[in-house]
Length: 305
Ligand code: GLU
Image (cartoon, rainbow, N blue to C red; front, side, top):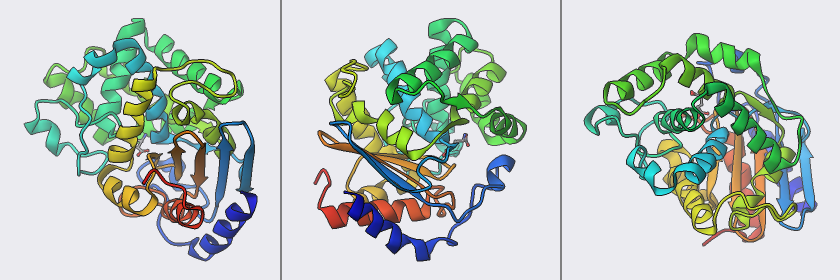
């Protein structure tokens, strides 16, 4: 496994320098674009890493997988009344569809959907602090590492410049699909997005999705088998915004990206893979990260197809 990861790293290194780090979040715009890390954790607990695999970065939208897992756990199918599970075909922060679809986001992995999920968690706890606490506790539990924390500088940077997210939340509130105070919902959403993790922690944390909802190492059940299947399906069809089809075509695995430059991908029954390289392509997904995953599945023949 380490040999394959080394080969992948060697082949993507010449691509570093292509793409652009996220510009709309000032703290992320400062990140060195020429970084690369990749880690694999097998369901038996063995793990492998190359590059800067111990260096934390902003997980951004990858956090939406954790918050959605919790919301599905608390609300089950009722959640689908507020957020669908269809690809949007639109950019991650688009307002257009929401207007003509009555404020119901297409899926939980575009910003609008994740903001509704966050709102649902605040309602569940009747307290934004408890909702954030629950998300963070869950992330720590998933990777069995209690050091995972919110990067408040990044969260504040998003709060200062999150104009489109503010617009999305207001539009949905106008349609009656946000129950709580907009500022509180967005604060919570920006903080969950601003958790810092490295690729080793990320690949470890997603093992429950590779193992029918049960963490294979601790034996803890995080979600039912049916719900794990659904999350993987939504990751496959919606995990990369308007490039989800392209990611499925090139990589052939359920995955979720974040504008911090991270991507996680799940190989059901076998492993979870995380990759980091902060320069993004035009769809807001890690350019080198996507290529690395494509090479990994091509070289190993591992995919769900
Ligand atoms: N916090 C980011 C935003 O709301 C998440 C987007 C992403 O990672 O794709 O814009």
